Image 1 (cartoon, rainbow, N blue to C red):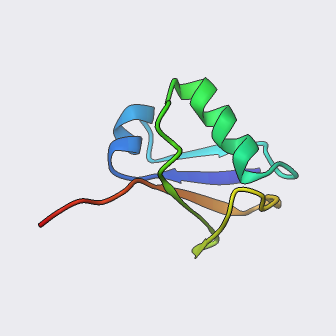
Image 2: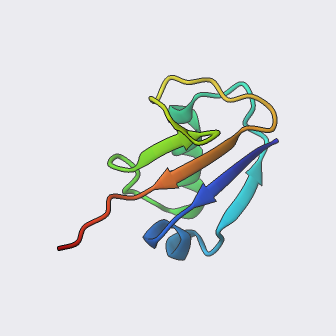
Length: 77
């Protein structure tokens, strides 16, 4: 199982701060597709993704007990 964390607007859209999914062996890209389909999210193309507190690319393969964080862009002034 993989822990998936959502921050800011993503947390509000999903309705949860954290979900646990059986996605070990899948890539970040595959996880994004699953999350888009499950939670009707269409705006994951510009989010930063971290696995175990390190930013990663879309082709990283997830392992059991990984923690994935989806972090939307931040704006401010």
